[in-house]
Image 1 (tube, rainbow, N blue to C red):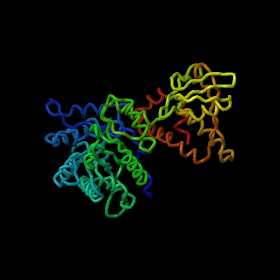
Image 2 (image 1 turned 180 degrees about the vertical axis):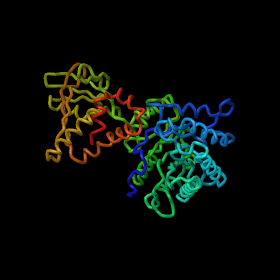
Image 3 (image 1 turned 30 degrees about the vertical axis):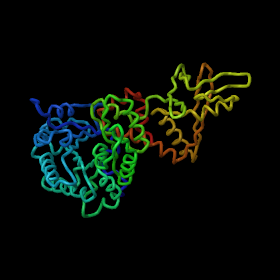
Length: 434
């Protein structure tokens, strides 16, 4: 097996949703677990994490472990995603590690009724690679005691320290050694809050630093080791636009998964990496991008940072206060430099099918054209862009299709949602292309 290859059923994880395992002062301390276990469709995450660490008070964690067993035994068979409880762990505390080990033994025990529904465990607060190996060894012992196949329990870790970040760089050398079972690794999840504390970082406002380097390093390590990278929690649960912006930035780094704190965030994160329903044109003005409206097939700009006027000499295009005098062909070129197209799922499938047909006919590369009519201040301008497609282009643009196919295969509870979003004909073509 190449270390670069995925070893788990899921090629992608969009959503990592945590739920407290025990709520103090409630008649049913497991009520939030029961609620999460009933999620379906776009509200249900790819990975559900009953959280017996930060989300649960220390005094409630033994009860929380028992609640995981009860709820997963009763509802786990019907849950559409994977179930990976988070147990306590700490690189500097043997007592905490032992408590996490005991909870893993309890939760994974098939005699308790939940073990066969558990896909793995999430280990927080790891340190250097030797600490990762300790968690792996504990999981190997749990598997041995319960008669499970070695490596059958996946291990995901939360990167919350500089030591853990550096450890990611050693995974390619460590995985596959006969002295460990680190092939069980599944997710690398960023935990920016504790990471900020560990690095003793300070910002003027007290807000978390954005840590783009950590997210890049996690994505790179996941790619190199055949794992999946997931970003940490986005605490402002009402800031949907900010959540989307974070996901868009992550996706450009190859990190397609993100922590979700509410079912509403789960919906946004489940849909976020999927190709859009319809294609759109973006007009870039400085550091801002504006999506053009569509009216009767024409793409219309309605902002005030770009203006266009006809003159006897041609056209005057004003962008952020700077005016250019242009001829018709020059205007088209200038607008093309400012415009980008975001393809829909249907567009991507069309392009891939066209290239596959050309390749079958013996062609190594073909030009794909995209045309539109853009309207600025009532003036229509026809534009056309060409893009050369070869095998490398095809492979690069296959990622969103592979993601879509992975979702379709592993989440049958979302089939109706996908058909409603894209149409059954497009879905059928998308699952067969590539």
